[in-house]
Length: 361
Length: 212
Ligand SMILES: Nc1nc2c(ncn2[C@@H]2O[C@H](COP(=O)(O)OP(=O)(O)OP(=O)(O)O)[C@@H](O)[C@H]2O)c(=O)[nH]1
Ligand SMILES: [Mg+2]
Image (tube, rainbow over all chains, first blue to last red; front, top):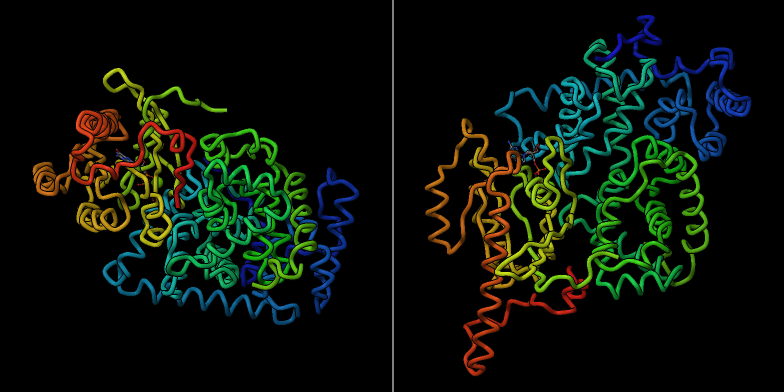
């Protein structure tokens, strides 16, 4: 099915490098690109070309979205996986990728019998149910990668282990890093066509970035999931401040925030929005401090709920639950996501440090 | 918005059992006649309804499909409250999911109404060549533990309709008998009979009975 890969940056220079996507100018760009987008790309590119990247510059550019060609290098820098200093960047990549390869080797050294059964078992059930129907995720090579990433992460974090939904969180990273090595759409590509070295690089970069993200939201996945309970409660308090009649209506109908917002927290809205939407959303999340995936996210969830305040007001219990369980976001583009993010930003600036309310945690 | 009170009884049912046994597919088969070979895992709970006819009455089932993974037990257990029926599902091709049944029964004892009607459901009966749980064994276990028992396939649709129809009928009979008994002999209550909470009441109809 998949077209033959036309690999980029495969001049056999090791390591498989994310950085060779940065160019000296905009001359490599396609002509269709608008002038405005070109300028944005150039600004980014210049910022990334500096021997010492200025983090606040990078943040301010990234806030409004990262050009997809640059995302594979910008995300790791924003997450702190790659250093700002360009001279040590390649060494870091080489070291972290080797480290990941070693973690994998150790985890699987004793074959299937040596695996932690319960963890492995759940991962095996969930891997084929990750982005079902999308060709990339149905390919054996992708599924094996996903299994390794999830298993290695789980055994390194025994307090939570593997929790369903973490599999979803792997996909934006994997697709983004895969896109650094191919020209075609990652979603219709078979990574089995890549060299083992490149495949390991994609997997390792995904693993380390996922780990960074999850570091900030571990409380969501440990026993009794206190992080989620806290966020859902805060979200309800916040929505009540903003739109008391909506919360009153939900209360009267017997709708609990846990009934719908649990999943919004557990999967970071990945079940509600497309992966493309989520990738754009994460550009902005990664700009914020480390707590974006917990703290800022609950403001996003609140703004998200308020998007449908009028519809919800007119519905009864069953209507509300069914509606929130399959929201009409299939056609959402960057435009809707950016509206959502700016709405959340306004809520955050208004309420985050408001005295006696929601401030701190 | 949705169907208002065009039913005589509203029964809340929960679907429980290990992850991957096919709970979500049983639900989609029953409520939408759909089977999805590549469904996603359930996070927390999902909800669907369908009305059926029992003895000339319209019985509406409000079904909560729960996540199977252990980690979600704390959140899903909250949904057992007010449920009058439970379909406890295992996979006939996976012994481990059958071995978990006792643990699920304990969950129900700890969190659900003591009068809850339970059906043990051996799903994936289409996987004949992979069967690892003999029908007789599960049937005997059910008898010993006062459960109903049925084998289903969400994939080829066999017995799915029956599984839901049977449990809803059982609940209907219990509820309507109780109504009958208590109206003819108000002094005599069937033992513990008061605890089946979901009867044709306005509260339950609008979800005001609340969950979690
Ligand atoms: N052969 C066969 N496969 C089935 C049947 N029912 C479900 N499956 C498959 O089993 C897998 C899991 O089904 P789900 O319905 O998602 O399982 P679940 O019990 O809801 O799992 P959790 O949401 O993780 O608790 C899917 O790949 C289904 O296609 C069945 O009757 N026969
Ligand atoms: Mg399910």
